[in-house]
Amino acid sequence: MRNIEIQMNNAISDSKNWKLANTEVTFDRESGHSRVYLHGNHIATVGENFVTITDGGYQSRTTKSRLNAILREHCVEGESVYQKRGEWFVTTFLGKDDKVTHIPFCGSFTFK
View 1 (tube, rainbow, N blue to C red):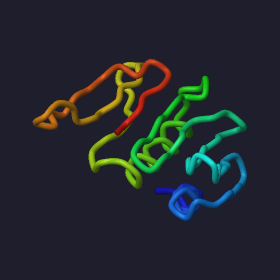
View 2 (cartoon, helix red, strand yellow):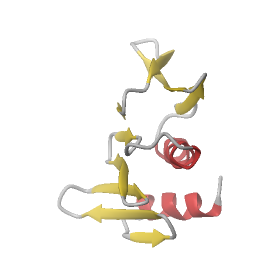
View 3 (tube, rainbow, N blue to C red):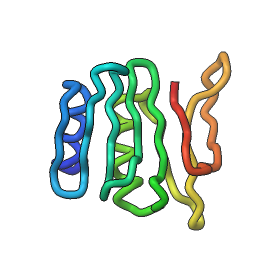
View 4 (cartoon, helix red, strand yellow):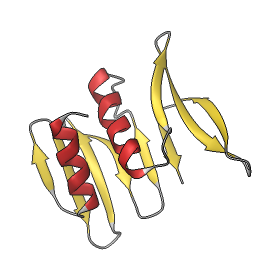
């Protein structure tokens, strides 16, 4: 994980506003949610019991890296975003038996 992603995750965990280079975290005291921006585009919202990710309109390596850093820190181990043949997918655990599932990524996804 890149140093900027470690600092980003620390800001999310500490409920703080933070910005470095192209990445920004804003914390909304009223909702208790942290919002993450890359190049000014919203790419994630992290709440107490959920993480919602978006591609912010850009399915770039940097976007995917930031999203995976957030998921590693704030979701269940193994949940991720990956690319196969130019298409983005989400790996998550679904159902009562928490079966590993690969879902096409359609711009946004919420992990609970």
